Amino acid sequence: MEDKIRIQDLAADEIRELLMEEGRGLDEQQSIALKQFVEDIGGMENALAALAMLDELERAA
Image 1: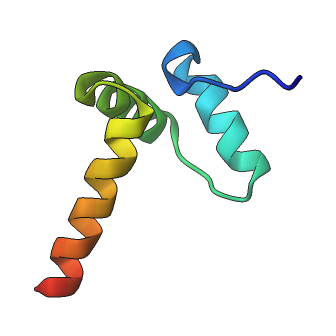
Image 2: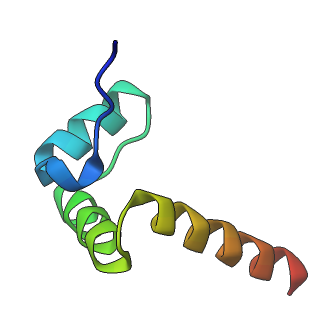
């Protein structure tokens, strides 16, 4: 069984490395901000829901 990666458990530099592997780069400050956002909002599920809501608001504007 494959272990799921929880972004809350990763260091900012690990998040950055994973995104770079996928062709999506973040600088150090952005990866720190992303980690803090996920922690502040209560986890990855809440972060994804917030981003989806912001996307809907942007399309409606």
